[in-house]
Length: 218
Length: 218
DNA sequence: CGGAGTGATTTA
DNA sequence: TAAATCACTCCG
Image (cartoon, rainbow over all chains, first blue to last red):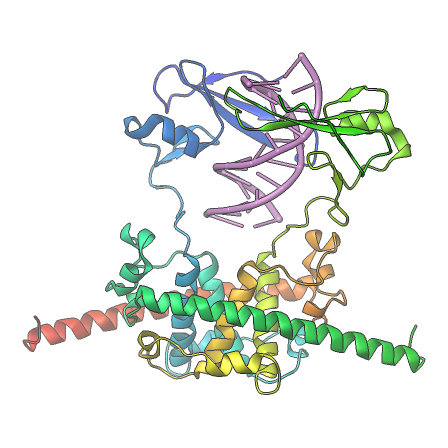
């Protein structure tokens, strides 16, 4: 058993670190890291450790897995966009991309982008430019941090965040009331989508049974 | 004391189930579930129960805590869509919504939806219908489960999942190669977006200082 | 009832 | 998807 607890220089004297390999199950081979306070209390995650230590120790640069301080790596942007912010930011980018595409830096990439054959065959209308803009913006929103948005206040109230002078949302002016309206519409839209899906499934089923009766089955 | 033992329909006749609430300690309020064989033997866990019953009863779908069979719930079905799947599904929905909007169930909602005034003032081109479709699809993707997608294989390989005959991706035919290509383009698009953002910020700064020098400042 | 060891869910 | 966090099972 690797129950060896080692000292952790990055933490106050007396704290120990331990790494335990999972021996069975779906996650066999992975490991868990634990810390033990001078009094022997066990800690299983950074948030838990952080809550316990409070302001006495700054864990901003502390890497829980390695047990070392990582200067410059002021932790990750845990600040994920909230649901409503995503909607608005997405709108913003889709429009801006379209606005830029024939006269600015985005042009080259977008012009040369193509959808895979398989996707193009989906049919229906809409043009690929719109789709590409949507993809690009959606992807950008999905994981990249937003330049210029670092205010702590942004975490609390989207309305405040949306009124800042940061580039991303400079053009917006959105109230909580508007956000609520938007949420209501969202519920309606979801219902509608479910109905559409149901209709599509039924149509498929009908198609299939028709083919079957026509002797097209394998 | 709640020592009440109740019949358990999911198990053979004569088996009883009992739930005992913990009254103190760190886990106060949590409960332990026990089963009793027709002969009175006590069982404290699913593995223990399983070893005793052997092949006579299939406990694969048996939920030890509730005492009920959970059909289809052969474990983790709450699997969320993966990144690439999100992209493709989003494309799918955006197109499908547009295709439906003038002749199907989605029409009423989409026709009556409006963007908040603040958003409309963002300017640039594009029409609201496209944006609304995009919003609706993005929202639907964000948290609702996808009907018809339950295959275990889907967890492992998006390419397999994308070739199924399920409604959601029926029209798609996407290879790993195509996904890799798409990822490459994504990187390019991201770079491009960053440049665009930078350009926009600079333009804003220039505008502001111009206004300042013209005496328009508050 | 405790808690080590894993599963499940969330985040990046 | 992988990593991190959190929840829960199972057995002492």
